[in-house]
Image (cartoon, rainbow, N blue to C red):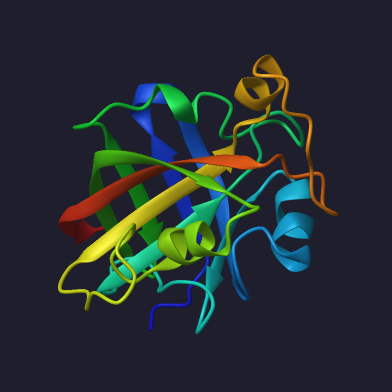
Length: 171
């Protein structure tokens, strides 16, 4: 598994140089939230998380939208076909966004869908490298009158942009 720290760029939303810190855990747990609070992205890896960049399976990356510099502030505006570049261990990985998922922190089945080896499809065996970029839907939840939050101040819903690896090259 590729567990190297990474740097992310998403040209469509003007994001460059976002540090991605891998850790053992699950999306938006205490350690992941602590990493995000530093203005970085967090990548949960291992049995309850995902894989590393370029590995077959789901490379999960979470970052704040409204606090700590809001690196994923414009993530919801990503469209299918937009590129996400991740550089790690001397390789640049090129992912292309292919779908959007909404998940609820109040539904355990949704959390499983988010971190599944094939995003959105628990139980399927991964055959390609994929990425799930995840951020809060605070703005949308509040607009709908939903002010629920968990112990880490995460709102009920997350917006996930899912993509597939389309190429690699030396960094």
